[in-house]
Length: 418
Image 1 (spheres, one colour):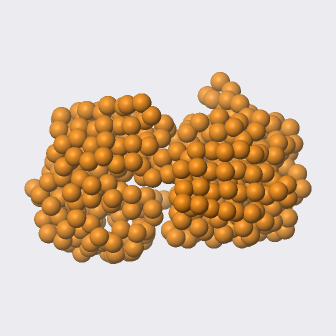
Image 2 (cartoon, one colour):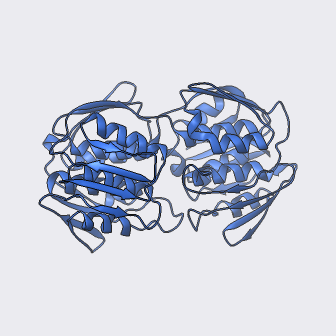
Image 3 (cartoon, one colour):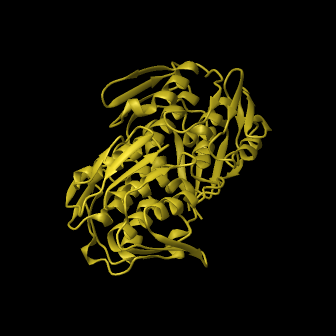
C-alpha cells in the first residue's frame, strides 16, 4: 500500500494550476447517459474516482474514449445493461448518480447501495423518495436499489435536507420527465450549477441552478454537447492552506475565486494577504504564523465541510484558540486522533472541536481515514518537525491529482513510498 512521506519545515512558494473538479466531473459523466448522441467533457482530472466512473460506464456497455489532456468522449448509444455492480460502486458514493439518468432514459436501473468515505450517514432516502414522486417504482433489497418507470412525470419535490447528489440525481432525472419539476430546498453548490450548464448544452430546460429552487421543464430527448469541467474549489482551498500553514506564498491559476469566498475570508482572518483576479488567486503569509480562526461548516455558500480538516491542520499551529463546528457530517473528526499523535492540542465536545495552537508539531506515522482527512494530515506534515508518513493514501488519490508533484513545485519535501 502506498504512503506519502513529508519532511516538514519548508516555507512553500510557487504557482499551481488547479485541476478540474472531481465533484463536478462525476455527475457530468453520469449525465452523459441521457443523450442520444455523443458528448465531450474537457478538463477532466486524472483521479481514481474518475477512473472508477469510466469503468462503471464501460461495464454498462457505454463507449468511452479518453483523449490527450484528459478530454473524455462518451457515446451511450451502445449501452446494453442498466446495472451498477457492488464491486465498482463500493469505493465511491457518487456512483448513485447513474440512478436518475438510467431510469429517466432507459426506464430501469439496478444500482448497488454505494460506499465511499466513512464520514457519516449520507442516506439515499431522498433520492428514492424523489424518484417515486416522479412516478418511478423503487425497491431496495439485497443491497441494491431497483427502479422502473415507463416515463417519469414532473412533480414538486421538497428535499428535507440539503443534498448535493440528491439535487443532481433528481435534476438529471427530471430533464427527460414529462412536464415541469420543481426542486425546493435544492443544493446551491457550484458543482450543481456546472451540471445544470452541461445539461443545458445538451438541450435541457433548467432555471434556478445556484439557488434553493430549481425548475426543470422536461424534454423528449437530449443531444450532443461539449463542456469543460469547472476548477476544483476544494483542491484550490487545500493549496491555499498549504501556503498559509507554512508562512509561504502561492499563486493559483485556472480557478474561480467567487466559489471560495468563505474560505478566502477565513484565510484573511488568519493573517494572509489575499488578492484575486478573474481566474487566479494569490496568497502570501509573508513568513508570519497564522492566527486561529473559528469555523462552522454549512452547505454552500457557507464554509465547506470538505475544507474543515485542512483548516483544522492550520489551527493546530496557529496563534490562539479556535472553535470548529462540523454541521454537515456527524463523523468527520476522524483525523483528530491522528493530529493528536503529532502533538496537536484538540478537545472534542460533540460536533465541535476546540483547537489550541502549538508552536511546533512533531512527525509521526499517521493513517488517512477519508479523502479530506488525508489532505489535512499532509498539511500537518508540512510543518511537523522530522518526517511524517501518511498511510492509506488511496483516499487522497480519489480527490487530488498528483498532490505530491504540485506540492514539490511549491518547494515541499514530499515523496511517495511504495
